[in-house]
Image (tube, rainbow, N blue to C red; front, side, top):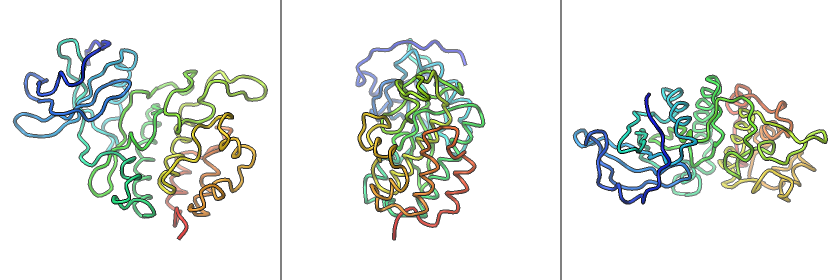
Length: 291
């Protein structure tokens, strides 16, 4: 793909009702605004098909996001990247539209019927694992796994989205990359191991930690701590007494899930469950919550 990403400073509403792709797609409304782009709802003029259209506003991530997302876009549980459009110095990514919002909304709104629904939790989480494992097999670490970046489709189908922070580096020194609630302790600068400050972290092991936080969201409807560092008293309590920590602080989770979490949240990344091991544990788990 030939494109020249630019730093864009634009009032988001200025593009409403305008068209892109030689007048084929009309921009209808704003779906969201983030650090790296503005996401619009668009519609093809003739077919009436809906799209999510991301206007990239950050030069640092533009090229990387497009390249990496294109590399993994064909997986059924990864949001399809339809095309990239260059227009008037702006770069637009045309994406598959998710009509039912994101997983965060599904978890936090009781009307969705997800909380305590073991069948739905297993079905959705296995899809997330499939998407992340496909990424890892293609040497891609997402680095921003969270419910807001998992989009909902009918019949509890989900797709992984937003590759703005994804990387093909297996080890990164880009600390603090991701979302505070979800990234691992080693992903944060200032962590010291064996009296030495670490110089980098495994990006794929960091993804596995984030998957554990998502799994807790499913079962408990909240996060276990605000941030996985020694300034967070709840995380300090986990570091000091990890055994049965989750059963004490999250009494609604099952014993089976407690054992799975114990294997995910190993402070030594090398000891964490692999994705195939985690998948097997999830398949064998009868209940994620206490009945």
